[in-house]
Image (cartoon, rainbow, N blue to C red):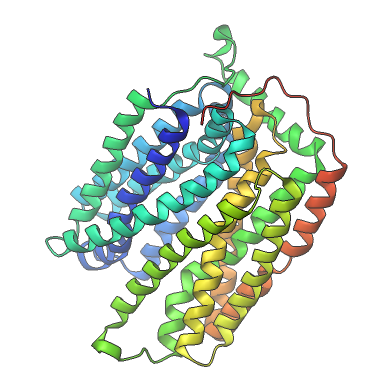
Length: 417
């Protein structure tokens, strides 16, 4: 088996590559090949988010009680099956069932992957690992996008099929090379009982109740989700409705969107490298200060994106806010991990994922309603203002962490990097 750090980067690269192959094509495939209408498209997104909301905590408890490694493998298996089925069978019923599998698979991965790498390499190294993984995923995503665009010229369903088969190949590889040395499983005589899963879930809830900082972190997850879902759903529509795209080089708007996405990915790689080299992400107060500054700039960036009078200013503001959002995610995850007991790490992280799903289910429609009733500019400004409460929450979490006494640890994982 490979060491855990290299496997973690391999997972990031492989998953980003294969998802990158299909992700830019999937919406076009749904419309042009499957013939889905707007209501059906929204329904698919609702299936994934609702499934994520319902399954986050149970799958996190399973990962804590049995095996984070197994949870990650099952998650990528379900995602691979999802996209393979969609590429083979362009039918609404099949696609809806496949999206249900993807929702479950995503919950197996969320929390379990971060908990696994934190245990395997130790908390002192995990913050830097999260940032490096973000860089790897962005680079692999650029490559995947280019490959997927080329494959789509042959057949629109082919990127989904190849991406799905690639995820299945990644799953098979993880069975062979993914280690797990530092996770304490439930006693052998209890592994066949659901009582241990329920007990682990209760322990995770108890850990949150016993540490006020974790409740604040859950609030931050919710605020971030409220903002990001509105942005993700409406940023293209805002650019198309509010601006005339430059005619430089005769580029079509589709090409401009591709160029913006590539610029975002490359910008994320550069900024993440600067943070990795200059910021001590193992230091809680330092990570909090960086997250506070990034969040403040994001608030301004999203509001400017909504109010901008020119295409260039709007795109610049969008890229700044999105790059800082991308780099903030590993910083936040590393900061949260400092306060978690290894015994319930995946469960608590999954609860964060559940709050994120609830925030997206709430924030997207609300901001979308503002866009429908008022204007897309107003919706983007609202998305920025929704993020503003993150600033006092970050300050509050910093103060709470400074006052709290960390929970007793069973052991210190060996550092293998």
